Amino acid sequence: MTIRVALADDQALVRAGFRALLDAQEDVTVVAEAADGDEAVRLAREHRPDVILMDIRMPGTDGLEATRVISRDPALADVRILVLTTFEEDEYVFEAIRVGASGFLVKDTEPEELVHAVKVVAAGDALLSPSVTRRLIGEFASKAKKVQSPAALDVLTDREREVVALVGAGLTNDEIAARLVVSPATAKTHVSRAMIKLAARDRAQLVVLAYESGLVRPGWAE
Image (cartoon, rainbow, N blue to C red; front, top):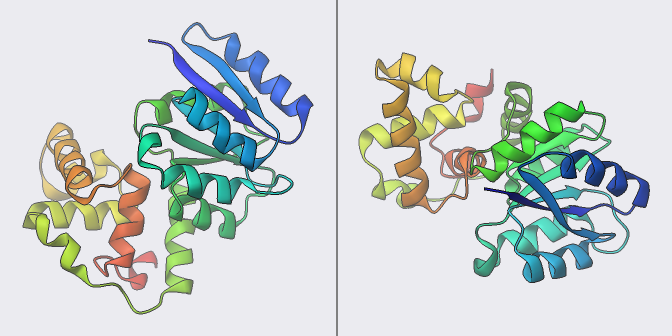
């Protein structure tokens, strides 16, 4: 199955480089290119790509706002966004994941890592490295306000709540399995069911929900 990718970056040379790299893959094809956020939104609606490589800093509507618009459009629920930037700063990681991005990479990442990232995100998984997860948690801790009502979590079983808390704390499925003494497949099933019940786009959104509901406390980041 071919992964359909759209590129959103204001630099034509960058887009050309990404296109050459991705089109060289047998199972990836670039279907559209955008030079700003407004065009990225329009092309997302026109082409419905599996993944959008979205630059954060673009003229006019930036990548964060375009990500927010796309993520809130029910018609684009299957479109995954991988945010790219030259600035590996906490504020971008935090905001990109908060508004709906499924992953975050810096532009100087190795080519094979970029291709891997596209495939991971296209498969419906979040691309959050341990270091990014730790920064994300740190941002929640530093920006923590009064938590929202945890009532939304009532749809979860006790075990699913436990699993969501561990996802929020930055654990992988294998680590969750070891902590709960279950198989990795069982841990993955619990995560998947929690995502469905909470209408989370992916694992990244579970981290956001875990913090905003108060299920994970800022002190866990230490």
